[in-house]
Image (cartoon, rainbow, N blue to C red):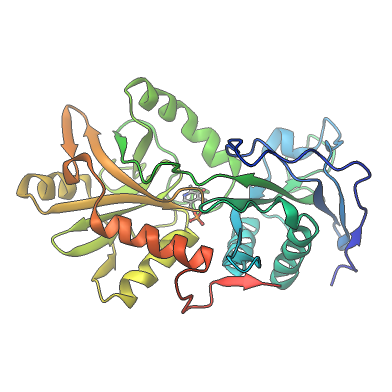
Length: 356
Ligand SMILES: *Cc1c(COP(=O)(O)O)cnc(C)c1O
């Protein structure tokens, strides 16, 4: 498939971050990266692992002008036995192709995607951090590289994978966040690209995010673009509410990104026989549950933080404090289960951890 992956070892290894150094998120990058080219008529070719370095692209490369770009985000972990394992990479492969289809970009063979990432992670395996909670974050992406300003789908692309060691998102245990319910701006609309993992959705979110920060809120809770009634996502995480003994998450409406963490949380809840439903859920319903006292817990989910407890929701003049601003038991239990499976301290009954 696409030819054998060529490996060009770096001549001068980078200094590694020290054991006590804060890794941050995307502050350090490993010694190598993976590249592969695509040309219309030829397909994908020349997969190669090369020293990490800047890319050279024509200023007219279409990605700079019309934004044909998709990405993924997943993590590799060191188990206590020293084995390096990746959390559900097959799911990211599928989602990448879903994004590719939406932006009219070329498919990548899903087995190749997983194998190429495993090869790169293996080459840079010494960069997988050891401290509990830390991981090697994997960022695959594809950009349109054909030079030209005519508006159409590019005939050339570059597939890139880079790796960055990251700390646990929460260094001192889970921290509840304040959320601003956004009733003016929208991240994504019905029929748009909200269910594709693409930078354009992030660009669309920056302004509301900045306004939320001014109001001391960490993230925005997005409502549907047309009626501003129904919940979509929280920042760049999927969102869950625990109301009256039942967990509810917005159904994948077309404008919501289908998170791998979201899918894993739903599976765990089913395993635990806790009722979980995917359906439309309105902000009015959340206000009602808050007033009735049935709103027990709320949290966001995504690869970076795994689970983020929501401490309060701010909607117009209304302030709703969830779980007294603390961490709910179910939120904590889900966080412990997923991070335990990733570390290898909890039984991986669904075969989520892929090793080479
Ligand atoms: C990546 C992403 C998520 C979370 O997906 P995971 O696969 O769980 O990391 C949620 N929403 C948006 C908009 C995203 O880009």
